[in-house]
Structure formats: C-alpha cells, structure tokens
Image 1: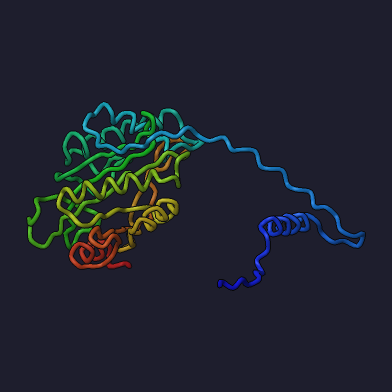
Image 2 (image 1 turned 135 degrees about the vertical axis):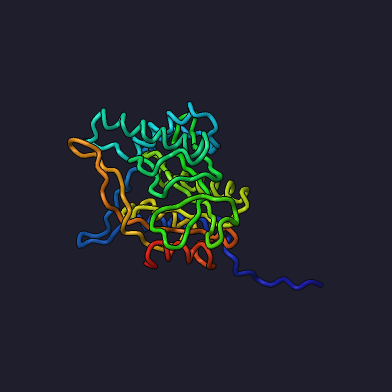
Amino acid sequence: MATCYPTTRRPDFLILWQASALLLLASFIHTSQGFVLVPQRPAAAPRALRPQYAIRVSRVTNPAEAEGISEFFVSSFWDTPITKPRQREQLKSEVYRDLTARYICGAGKSGASSPAGSRMGAARGKSALLVAKEGGKVVGCGGLETRVIREGLVTKYEVVKRGDPPGTCLGPVLANLAVDRTLRRKGVGKKILMECERVVKGWGFQEVWLVVDEKNKPARALYEKNGYELMARDPRGMKVVPTEWQLKEMPVTNLCMRKDLRKGKGGGGAGLGEFFAGLLGGQR
C-alpha cells in the first residue's frame, strides 16, 4: 500500500499572488509621511529607424564608377566649412585620377605628387578598388595595391614581381578607406576590411599592411578592433589640408599597421615587418 506524505509545495495561485504583492510594494517608497506611490516613468517613444538595405561590397572595374566614389571620398575627408567649391572640384579631379590610375586602369600611372594620392609611391603590381553600396548609394570604399619595401629607402616604394629583386619583400597595402559619416561604427568599415582580406588571400598573401594618420582615432580604433597591430611610426608623412586660399600639404605622423591573416591578428614574424621598421627609422 502506497504511503502518502504531506507536501509543502504552495499552490500556484498563491505563488502568483505573492509575486503580485511584491511588485505592488516595489511601487511604493517610505517617507516621513508614510508610504508614497512612486510615479512610473512613461515609456520612451520609439526611435525613428533608418530604412535598412543590404550593404554590398564589390570590386570596381569601370572608370565611370570612380567618379561617384571620388565625390564620396572628398566629402568624407574634406567636407569642412572652409573648403571652397573650387577646392572640392580640384580634390575630386585629383582623387579620380589617382583612383583610376592606381586601381582600375592599371597601377603605376599615378604619381606620388598627387595631393590626394598615396604618399607611398608608384605601383605596378596587383591592385583593386572596392566600393560599399547601400541601396545603390556609395557608403564606403577602399583600395589595395601590392608594393615592395626596400632597405635604405624612406617613403619610396616600388612594386616588382614576387622574388625580384633580392633584398625586398612584396606585400599588399590597404589605402583610401572611407566610410559614410552617418554609417560609421555600424559595421561598414569591417565589411570593407573583410573583403580586402579576401582579395589579398586570393592574390596569395597572408598579411595586409596599411598606413593611418596617428590623430585619426576612429580609423585606428577600427583597425585595432579588427586585428591590425602597430608596427612602426613615420613622422615624415604628409596630408592635404584646405586653407582659406589654397590646398596645402601639412606634415603628419603616420602609423604603419599590419594584420597576419593566418592568425587573424597583426604582428608576428619577420621579413616585411622588419623591412617596414627599418624603412621608417626603426621607430616602434
């Protein structure tokens, strides 16, 4: 015969009643005049959300498409109150020539003297221009080139075929990365970086190099978050700044960063890293 034991479990309705009572008591605070009901904060109005489109990153092969990218690039870097219309047009023209020559129509046709171009010299190797679009609108871009670092040079780079000449190391360099101001910190920059790294692996490399202005903290944060590590500093860099009368080149300290794609992070290894450090005077 089964033995029945008394249970101490409370009925479900009693548990619900006690929980409701606790919630009600939590709505009151004790003051010198007794318990006072605490007014509940009204619910915040729902935020207006920006319509979301799939952001796609693709490779640019048509020079005509570079016109829109050039305009976007100028707006991203030189959209200041003192930038005059004629300066914007000059910058747009320079950027267009630089992007098409370096990344679309064949590397090596862009001079390092271009005020909007890279300060890393001419290139003749592999190259690619990537664009990020949201609903057909340009919201980001980035360029890739393979370059060579030679001992004894300062900021002069020359791309050669892999293995030529002795004493040099060939590596991919990321430059001209820009993201729409309204979409920063929303993953657009990361998407561009991921596509750049995919392209680089397709070229047979396992690392990516880049140069960034030391004072560009948002860009540095993006690179560091995605595994790029500081390898060297170059205090002899230059950048273009609009002034009241003309465009001027101003000195800037650049940071050379690297990501090891085999480890998913920067740093490590010799070879190109040692050349880069020696190139910039061994400043770490």
